[in-house]
Image 1: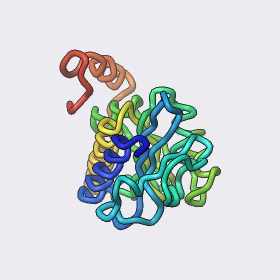
Image 2 (image 1 turned 45 degrees about the vertical axis):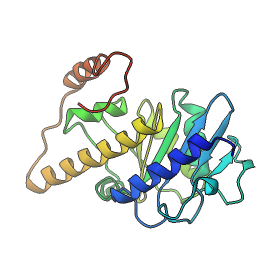
Image 3 (image 1 turned 120 degrees about the horizontal axis):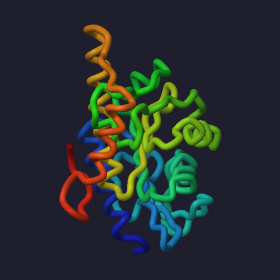
Length: 221
């Protein structure tokens, strides 16, 4: 089976995403990009993650031509391929409909530096793209236009999309974004959140460069 490891990881992290309620039912999608092959393993359209098998995961090129698999790829394939084209470090993309991130997407408001862990996205603010119809190239283009240096972006009235150097880091970023969005929401329910300054976040980002064990991926802060 072509890209068996990537397919198995898509299934594994799809179940994690559903279990954590980052997305429910068949919503949300995951992909992993193999740069050497120039191919992407992406979750199939409309299949519950706990029912998805590795052979259901679809292998496409970055033009969405199906290379292997008998299922239809996620309707958000353009969102994934656009990130791989414009973010050279990206090897995985996770798109969720998590409650608190989507709440701010509905408000059209960014996620701000109410907690330093937002630096995991490579920026001090995670912007919100304007609403575009799901499953369209226009949605992908709108997301990429506003995300800038960020590895995360909110999709207006829709959800969140993130990328990472591997599926573990992309999924971890999606979890961190939901955590920060919930903090921001709860703080706003009480009063005005204290947002970290650009100088404070610059110091955080510098410290992130040497965080963790040598040659290991980031696992927490």
